[in-house]
Length: 321
Ligand code: UVW
Image (cartoon, rainbow, N blue to C red; front, top):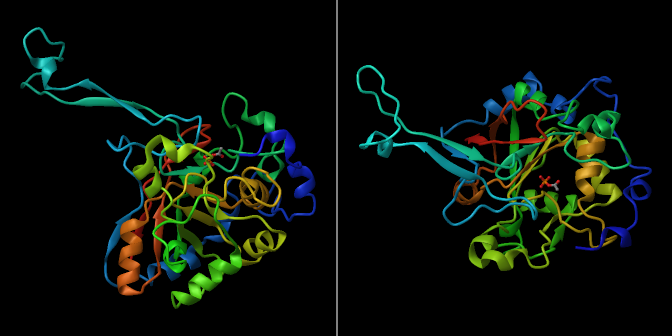
């Protein structure tokens, strides 16, 4: 990645970029999810025809490893109680009737698996989503935490955009980029049209390389993904996109090749427009099925965990066709 001090400032890059601050009131903490009302839910439900169900969460504690953003560590699951605790000299509690049980706990980054980012997860220039002061993050997010997203839930029509298949590749390459125009071309090739208020689900299959390469995967870490342009941000704004779901760790090309800035779209889309971001989704079974039955639009349902002050939360989104 480019050194932080050699890139221009987000304040300058995004000085004329649109925001939705205030659009849903000064206290709003769920942003573009406001675009998903009863009308969108009912339209999405009408897409259900075969009853096929797909879950999009990656395994937490995968024996093959958990892909996480550099600096984070995979979840650690610890067994607290199991049958050995009732072996001779064990510490298992005695309950009337002879009950035994297993207990375990995890020590995990809230953003260390398939996850929703809270809108206040990331910011620049001292302000979060909706203009909340960045100091409201100290000790936990008092504003725009993941909790309001979890309380509300996310239900709507989603469209799979299989960029890897569209480009004829098993996985997209390190640092490979695409634009909103590429998304529309991909949709056309799949025989569909992206509609206003669609949840975008984008497949790169880049994390296959994590499982194939191990530690080498993180050398020169630069995920493929959408790349910033004013036109792309305007398109998200006009299309009223509520939620961007990808199978990468951070939703967008990590370092913008045009300016060297890290995670520009987290700021332009999430901080400024209130678009919710969902990362590390496992889209493989869904994508294979879409390629087979040609149905790339479906009902999407997700609710992150209700974590007070949380900057994100694990989630297991469900797709129903
Ligand atoms: C960062 O924002 C650093 O990571 P992510 O959005 O992938 O959780």
